Length: 434
Ligand code: ATP
Ligand code: MG
Ligand code: MG
Ligand code: MG
Image (tube, rainbow, N blue to C red):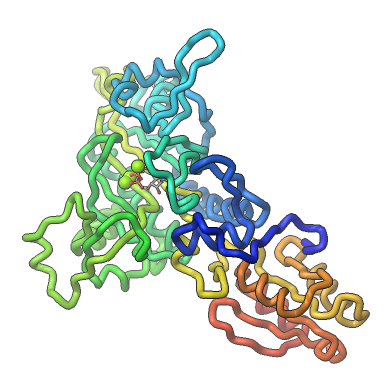
């Protein structure tokens, strides 16, 4: 992509309404634009990051055995009347009416709908277990939408739903998602710690929130420092095998949100290992048994012919919130420092002298070698403007090319995260970046 042709609007001024760094940087770097309170349009660079986050989420869901579907955003109120949540959900649900006066709603979550879809097909225990997920926009009419996409009203969520014949089976499904979540966040370079959590309006009795530590987080959390040293990617999970040792490893150390905080258990954590901090909830998994399958009329024939009500769980990841959380975890005064796995482009090429034949040629060769992953700043702007914009947007590599280097075929390569610079040939640059 060439900047002279791109739609990548950046702002010089810090937007006054943005209270936290990720919101400020998302607006300044031209990732999103608010269209109404808590509702955002995603601009090209922001959308590329959002898609990268969603891709990693999908890869890890698929690997754990979940299957992708796509359910609609608009749901019929009737589904929710059946589960009893239509009244309970309260004002956070956006209720709408179609032209025939039928009550509809913009889905805040999909337990009812997925149960209804499943009921339409599955009649035997042989078709269990199954886990279905989708990545779809949700609407929750938050009392206080704030911090940009961190707490939006419309937001992108991955939500998965598991169906099992037995409680033990459902717990295995829960552990599969637990492990998949650890891997998902780790692949984005985030340390998300599973913590005992409240179940809220989803219900059930077993639940973990996945939380990233950040000063701007809205939750108060308590954890054993040792959890911060574990690497979820250290070993390949066997999703069909027994995952209890892995899950047990994580749940054997203290980690809880303030709703579940237990002073007695906390007191047992050695003082030097006690971390009490603010955190951002990026994922949440629930096991809730037959809370939805029962009222939604889900029944299958068990192995002995008797009727069984499947056991369910649901598993959410805040895909759009993650984009903001990633910035909270990766930035400096100059701007964003995207981890490689989610960056909008791998490299910003800075042409310091557009119009100079050798400089243009070297920039074009680098750009042509990775056209989808390089952003070429070919604008007739001062070098200072280009440096500032490249730091703001935060692609992991910057390839700085001016007439002096171009004359000898050299590129100055800068690693955005560390600020390290080196002068290399075009081939070496490509080898590093790709
Ligand atoms: P919160 O406590 O932040 O209100 P929640 O507990 O209501 O979140 P869940 O029902 O657990 O949210 O939804 C699953 C995930 O969806 C959350 O872990 C979070 O990452 C994301 N999410 C929830 N509400 C929002 C929102 N308003 N904006 C962006 N992401 C959200
Ligand atoms: Mg909420
Ligand atoms: Mg919550
Ligand atoms: Mg939650």
